[in-house]
Length: 455
Image 1 (tube, rainbow, N blue to C red):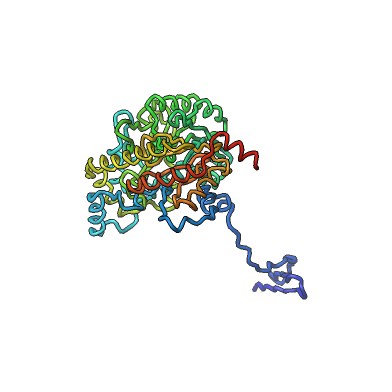
Image 2 (image 1 turned 120 degrees about the horizontal axis):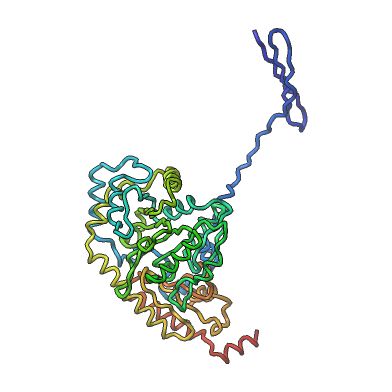
């Protein structure tokens, strides 16, 4: 019979040493001395968590200012259309969810890419002759932000780079850097209604470029690209063989004098992952229902990208099943007047805000054509007491209790972003306070020079 002898040697401050002998068939075999592990706590945050950085939160959280207690706070900073209650979703949308909840049929797990019937509903809703879709081309996600995350994760490896608009939605950079993906910023041109600087864009492409992000309609700019400009963007992507990640969460949210063109409808060979969802157009961002539409008519993505998206979707087992169950009805039974009324309110607010801010010396708003935002240039030379847009917006809060996001949050200093989903009377009051603030601090050319000399 085999026997085992384990002898522990150790004293004082030294770790114990295990002297292991194995006795087999009467013969003793020494396995040597093995230093034992002294247990200790060593819990550390992951490298991924350390690389995760949201520039909006970092900037806003560092703005240590208190609003003017004599004036009610007006926040024009949050891109959530539900905050003030003036833009409720349609009754048909809420009824659809209530009926699904009452049915008790959608309380279990769904496939990680979404129910087949729901994918069919999304495919049918967005399919068109120029860009046909089937259920297999749809991945349902937990909001558009997860759609963007999955699209980035399937297209790019650590060490590669992606092309991101400047100014642009901060989440692209937050996600990419956490994955070890480099971000290259291409410029948008305010003097051309925020069109892409195509020469600058193309100059950034190299052998490590994994994809190009195109956000249309735009957050934070409120711009909408024309058909001809989208075709020029596609020409660059085609020449450079770079796939497109299209952030189209504001798709169809364009004003009456403008037309929205899904970029996939104009592509003959560039493969596109289009990300969208219910959040903005249906005014339910908290319901977390998004999707990826796979447009790949030349089979450039092939099975590789589709299989990759399937595997990635299995990490959190898909979006809310209750909302999935209501999706077909939401898409097909929401009355057209609901969309029309929402856009009428946004267009009216945009026009009011643009007109009011255009009349203020030192500010240059850029007229929006869709989405929920408006960007305003600060002519900093006329406000020499402020170092930058962050200081300008901090003082706007402390003196006038109006909160606009400094565009440094979007990699574009000396602008600020206004959210136009607030009630009309709040837009007018906010613009009035911004005017009072600017008149208080504005310096003409001579005054600005004098102040600089005093410094």
